[in-house]
Figure 1: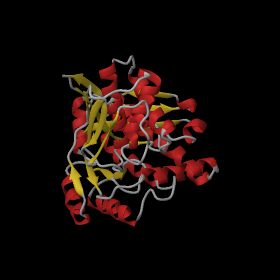
Figure 2 (figure 1 turned 30 degrees about the horizontal axis):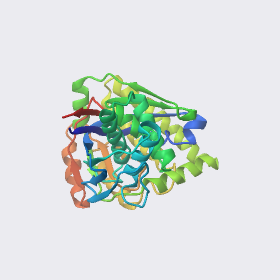
Figure 3 (figure 1 turned 90 degrees about the horizontal axis):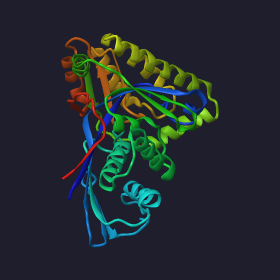
Figure 4 (figure 1 turned 180 degrees about the vertical axis):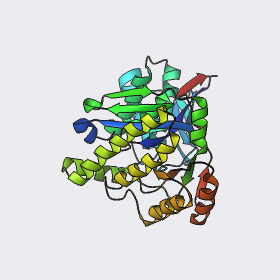
Length: 340
């Protein structure tokens, strides 16, 4: 028997950062995001020899240990160990023997929610194998619980829900980790046109999102008005972006992205740097009307809105920076799992 699962990565179109506590607890957050055809994969092969094998192909890391109710974090695949430990403690109440193989289409620190999407995919594989009675909200909440609370990794809530639900979603975040996912019904031709008008560009530099997020959290805790106001405006951009997309006013989205980027840079230090600013301004001069860094900032992927046929000139202008253009399409489905 072989159990597989896959979950899509996401692009945060607007509102990024407002899903992070304590902002979402105090003021409520809102994000517009959409999943793309880049995925995190997990495969489980049950074993009967009393061993556990964890194999992260993309990271070239492998761990083999005897089956146990608790796998000690030691710096090697601790994220996967944390998932296993939680599932054994709260669901199986006994050790498991298996081989788990994972792979993610984007590198860590890419800004596309790769770590949280991987957590979601792994949980999806275990849910399929163990026949756990968990729905979409349950799985997303569990992924958040393990990554953010159990393991203490800094970050927000949108990635786990985007990976689980898939598609284009307007998400609302409240106190006590309450999340409401509002799926948007967008015509196929609109999504194709949006994908055509957008460029996904990998800067070639990954970043540690937790340090940026911690700065953002501290800005809210200490009530730094410039940062708080920037986050209010960022949330407002998510609402405006949702309206533009629903009305098929796609060219407005570039302008909204630009305003959102200007506000995002004020949320915390480290979100941008001279290299990122240089890439952004070059894309704008070549015809992009807006764009932003994906995720917390500092590196990883950027994306730009290029109306008409300006995408070609923008792509050409970015060659000198040594990054890479990634073609993509939006996806309508989220986490899926199956058994062979």
